Image (cartoon, rainbow, N blue to C red; front, side, top):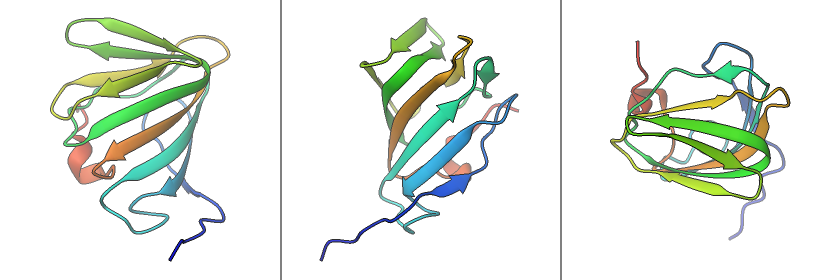
Length: 120
């Protein structure tokens, strides 16, 4: 039977500034560990610690620009573009532009603090 998710849970974000994470589906809001789907609203100048997650992350940028650092390159993902970050690969997300960014992140399996493996 279909299950309506009426509203997201607001999750505390890591990083140098407050960022809004609205989890619609995942471990917190729907008690599912197979997938997480969240809308992110990051201010300009936001940057989070690097991470080497145990999940694949699929990101679709809705507004602004998301910058993704890897060990090999810096990728700028603009509104209307998407990025796939594979599990086990080090990545670091930021929104350096003044206007920040809004994007959807899908993690398979679901995001968790135990499996994100953030840098110290």
